[in-house]
Structures are given as C-alpha cells and as structure tokens.
Image 1 (spheres, rainbow, N blue to C red):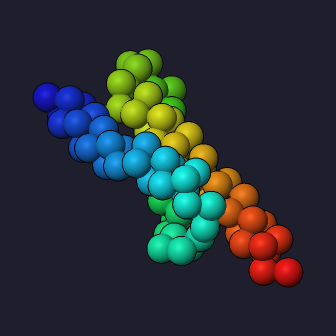
Image 2: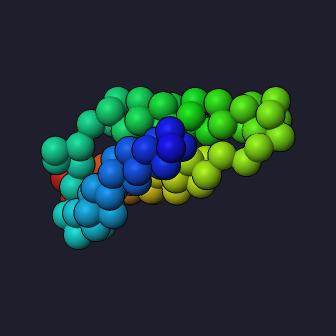
Length: 95
C-alpha cells in the first residue's frame, strides 16, 4: 500500500510539469521561473531515483515509484533546459 501511495504522491507532483513546460515553450521568457527552484526539484528527484535503485539492489524487488521519479525528473529537466533557451531568447531580443 505504501508504494501505491508514494506513486500517487509523485504523480500528483508531476501533474503540473506538463503545464509548466507548455508555458515555458509559449512564453519564450524566464519571467516567473526560478532556476534555483528547478535545480532543487531536479536534485530531489535524482535523490529519489538513487534511493529506489539502491532499495531495488538491496531487496531485489522492483519499486514502481521509480518510474514516476524518472518521468518527473525528465519533465523538470526539460523545463530547466527551456529556462536556458528562454534566457538566451531574452538576451537576443534585448540587443
């Protein structure tokens, strides 16, 4: 039951990232984005992935929340990369 609840929690956290990515793509701006926040979220998901892989290695039991951690890491990393793209766009248009 705990793995189901953990997966639901991670999926709930991840539900907002597609909207954030779409906003970043459309806006072409870093306004309202915090690079520190994105990096800290990436770090947290990376720690969760390492934890689940370590747990899997120690017990031999695959943990399904690992998939949700990986998907969330991919989405947050995408938004982080869009932050840099949008910052480059802002600098180019400011000239």
